[in-house]
Structure formats: C-alpha cells, structure tokens
Image (tube, rainbow, N blue to C red; front, side):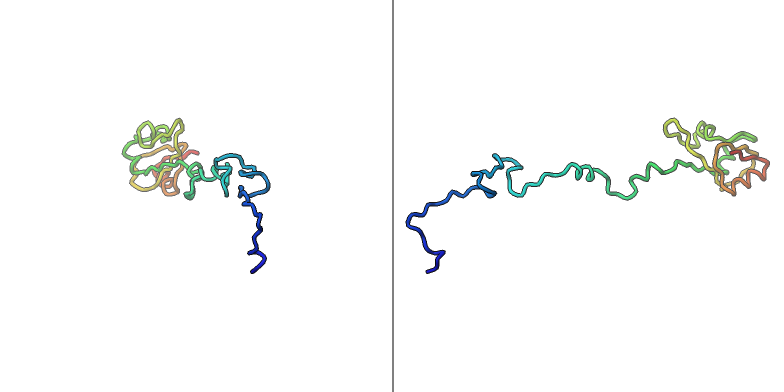
Length: 143
C-alpha cells in the first residue's frame, strides 16, 4: 500500500468549482455568456477593419489610372471638316469620346489611318507619328 492510496476515515468530498482561485463556483466570471466560457477570445476591432480591405492586387490603383481615350487620325478624317479645330469638347459633342461626370477626358491622337485634311489640334495629346502627319498637311498642334 502506498501513501496516496491511504484514505481517511473522515474524508469529505470536496466541491469542485470553476478553476481560477478561491472565488466560488463561477471563479469571478459571472453567469453564462461568451466572456464566462473557457478559452474565450474577443475579436479586436482592428482585425475587422483589416478584413474589410480587398485582397486583390492593385485595388487602390484604379483611382490613379489615367482616363486617356485614343482616337485615330483615319477616324478624324471622316468626322471633321477641313481646317476645323480638334478639341476634346468637339469630339465629345460628335460622340467620338465618352464624358465621365463633368470632366472631359484626355484625348490622344494616334497615327493609324489616312488623313487628307488640314487640322488644328488643341488640348490633345498627340503621338509623334500623328504630329508628323498633321504638320505635313499644313495643320498645327497647339499645347
């Protein structure tokens, strides 16, 4: 027989209460609910904020993306008269480009297609090839 096997004649069954000190059956946790359970963890608010941010790559870059619409010289030749001034406003009125909100988008003229008319280009970006073709026909590209 071992010492741990010895039983007292007058042993009393102990009341087994919630773990964590001499604080009674609930060990200071109160009654029921998430906070009274073992292993409870409250989710931090910052985690919820992080989880709302999209995971996909480049989600912030959509704001910084430029709104440049491209127009070919061949298409301009069909819709614009000889000696007319080409501006983003004129192109929007002729429904060549789309307006988003109140702002006119930036327009870039590209050299593809055949140009036969003299044009004056204003407030548009122009590729090197397009600029060369416009100036060959006696047209001008202004700022």
